[in-house]
Image (cartoon, rainbow, N blue to C red; front, side, top):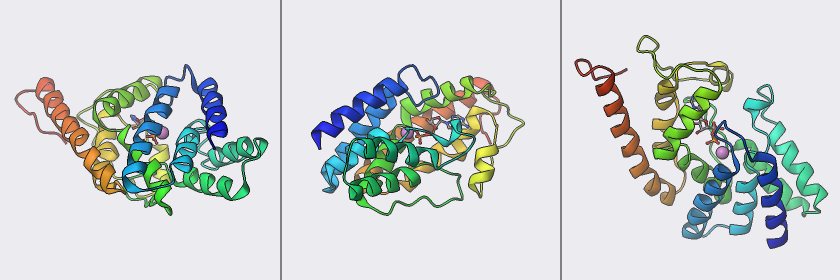
Length: 219
Ligand code: ADP
Ligand code: NI
């Protein structure tokens, strides 16, 4: 296992270095560390968790015309080329195909304990101080407004609705980031999410206060 982990880390590092949409190599490395911490505390298969964490953003649907099968396909190709056993390949691809957030009203529960560790590790990196930085980096890259008090957030009921949105970045906090704490799938993930969640709440309070001290409550 350690050989394929080293080769996969190298492959992903080369592929994602320089990305400025929130999916650079450092995101993968942080998710790997978060997921491994959770896996150790939860008693999951750490090798499988590390492999899936390394490959979880190999081909994101946001950059493949909304195609959410591109990631599992690219991971399968890589693992097959590297002669990983078919059972492990299926487990990894299953995790990658369901890991991503698809809208407030869309259920994305993971089938395996290892999947829950990777998803919680990924979601921890979407919240807190790093999560705030990633959201604004994403918004800048895609030309989104930072904030528009006239545009209310939406709770998307389907993946199609979530995919097609183009709202200001502050709305993303209400459409995804603030919802993640209650959707963590492991008790370790829930514990780690709490402090990051509170930090985002404090950040938003300050943001709206600075925007307009006379009307600091939004939405
Ligand atoms: P993850 O890698 O955590 O699954 P995504 O692939 O959904 O996250 O998105 C990458 C990063 O960009 C995340 O930090 C996410 O919160 C952020 N992001 C995604 N969509 C938006 C958006 N509409 N506005 C601002 N940030 C976004
Ligand atoms: Ni990710």
